[in-house]
Image 1 (tube, helix red, strand yellow):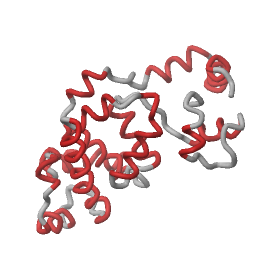
Image 2: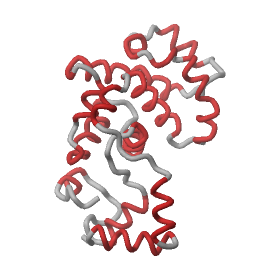
Image 3: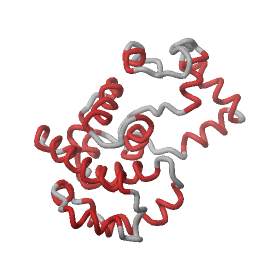
Image 4: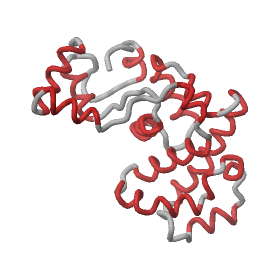
Length: 202
């Protein structure tokens, strides 16, 4: 695998020089400190998971435009309330034009509320779990999102973590192609086993 300096130089050449690369990187927020992540309410984690689930395979612009409606419909993403969502509320969501009426994605809101409620019972809050999970074990964290969350596998969970300010990587097409180019992985697969065996490769 190439050194970080070599990768940075390649990126600078591709993006038009070191100044252009620096300007692009400045558009992205730096990871938040552990204390700030811990202080983030679990409702905000549920909101971000929901937003990323609904954006997956859909127009991000549409979800952004409709997002105030999502906040209203799901009443600020109260985890305790949504974890025990009655059937009649689910039916109401399916008919509410303020949100995107995708039944499977709407169901994921309750499933992820239960996921976060369980994390809170185990760790004091879901925010504490995410904040304190080692940045060196993102593969493990991604596995938790995939196994215990709903529709949070793959890029959806990775993007949600990044947007929340958790130090993380995103396996974008460019990243996967770079890993293939340097023979870190074979083909287009990125298995947990291969990734875990190369913790410093991304």
